[in-house]
Amino acid sequence: MLAVFVADLVAHIAVHPQLPDRAELAHMVSVSTRALGVIVLPLIFVALSALGVWDVPRALRASTIALIVSLIAIGYLAARRVPLRLGQRLIVLFAEFTLGIAVVLLEVLAHHG
Image (cartoon, rainbow, N blue to C red; front, side, top):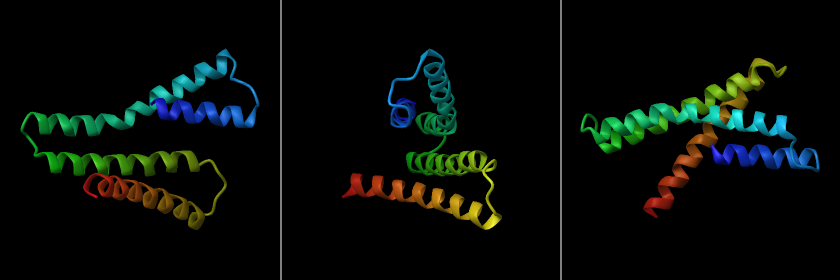
């Protein structure tokens, strides 16, 4: 949530060389708070692991898949209003998928390297 808020704040300052006003700040906080929705499934999967229903690798794998699917779904919802041809839209979604996989691979390398 904090990363989304900071990114939004930095983008605002880059576009408008000033801090956001109260209404803009409230909107940024609202958007950042809604971003927490993507961690519901991963938290459920980790809870299942903590309760002994699932093993840890399965919970982490399911969490990773849920987060990547969320990334693609959110990207689709954001890009659906942009006038793109189907091929362009698929390229954007594939790029998001590839970026998500790359982040996961970098995390694995960082922890096992």
